[in-house]
Image 1 (tube, rainbow, N blue to C red):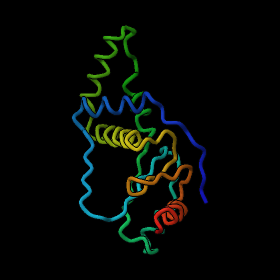
Image 2 (image 1 turned 45 degrees about the vertical axis):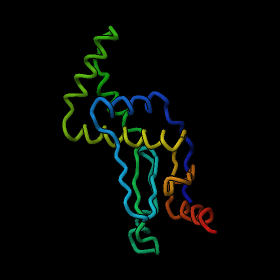
Image 3 (image 1 turned 90 degrees about the vertical axis):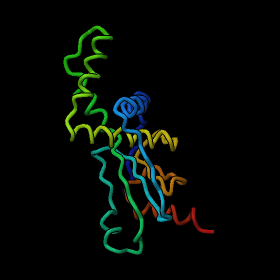
Image 4 (image 1 turned 180 degrees about the vertical axis):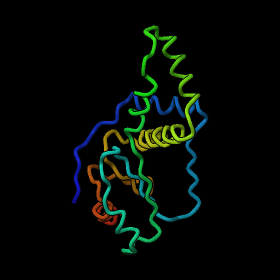
Length: 159
């Protein structure tokens, strides 16, 4: 079983993700039209999520959808935006916004994924990670192995 240490989600990162989604017009859209179960994993980029191969290998979990949200992605991009900013707060803000607007397609996509992940974590009330959310209802904290987390989910979901 893979168990990771908890890390709090920085409040400023969650607020920044909401601001960036608004500024860039990249509001998350959750279009769930079918009844297939889904798992959202919230972790750091350097936290390995295991068990994905077992799900893909036909271990009786066909139909599960897994989405991994990398929650520390904004920290990397924030460092890029913050390089050589002016000391004056209004000038620094203006320069940072200019840098955001001039992002290339790859960085824009990375920023969107990171911001959506943080916004989803805030939506679920997740305040630390790693965490896995099943069907938008059950949160399992501290696990990074999908098979083990599915055992917890099945116990909760049984009538």
